[in-house]
Length: 218
Image (tube, rainbow, N blue to C red):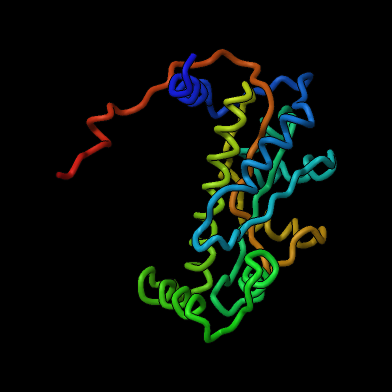
């Protein structure tokens, strides 16, 4: 099978799995590959506004179910359950950006540097990111790139997944803060995701025709 066919087969195999086989567990090697695909994902300006929480505690899984109706199938059957956080108030002058520039990119940070000025201008003038919610939603968009890469990587390894937005965000945020897992000044919940092996038939994948969603402008 050529690479093009392998890629498309992985996408055809991927399905938002509603029922997982509790008896099947993802190997450490496969999971490390999946989470590494998330870590290596691109983000705007390379600032990586995310954090990945792998929930192994059964108590936490049980307590999350009250406010995460869309996650119950994953909480009760998936091999691995992730909560992915997005950073709050990410601007060119934030401590996280300073950390990324100095500790990851390896260059001196300055509020007056061309990159900082360019980034602040982009947020303010190009994308009109002025409120805390707008900044959070922009950061959250970046985390979905990592989600797509993790799900596709999982499908390539014949591992199933389920992306989850079915939860009360404020309640889950508050729960994680009260448990001491999240600093509310730094992060908020972006989404959840279950990974494991399906315990259901593969349904026919239904999508719009390519001509309905694809246009060539010449």
